[in-house]
Length: 92
Image (cartoon, rainbow, N blue to C red; front, side, top):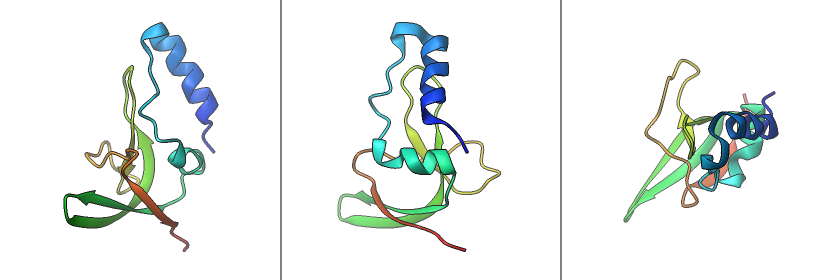
């Protein structure tokens, strides 16, 4: 299990006062920590898209959560912002 608190402490140490976690949508913290596979809904204008994956986080001084589609993913362009709607945890 990952620790969001430890992540924040590590990044604060790395970037100092420049570190800014304000874009980390708190709705996704539990899924970042437990690495559950989730389903979310993205909306671009009138278009809605449902995607599945695990929650990762970008690197840098102003991080954002992102949806990692597979465990082998190195990155993603699917950012989990305040406009992303959590739908459910995927049970196996």
